[in-house]
Length: 105
Image (cartoon, rainbow, N blue to C red):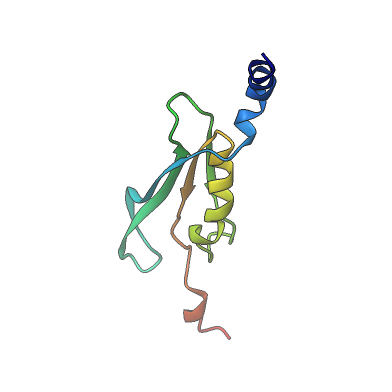
């Protein structure tokens, strides 16, 4: 009886425990020209709990002002969100221009 009571009291907190995840890396969601008109793949990483069901979607776009940055830096946070019963799409975007090629300096 004590074990049953413990399980019943523990169930609401199960979503707080880390969940087993499914990770799908580098899914191409589109193609677009970069600032030099070269076609670039636009990809995303998808993380979601292995337990079936419907989960809220978070679309995470990394910082960098569309000039720098990478989705890879924020992957650990996306995994933690997915462990908390969210589906997370970690999106890579194309940079607006390459500041290393700026000749005004």
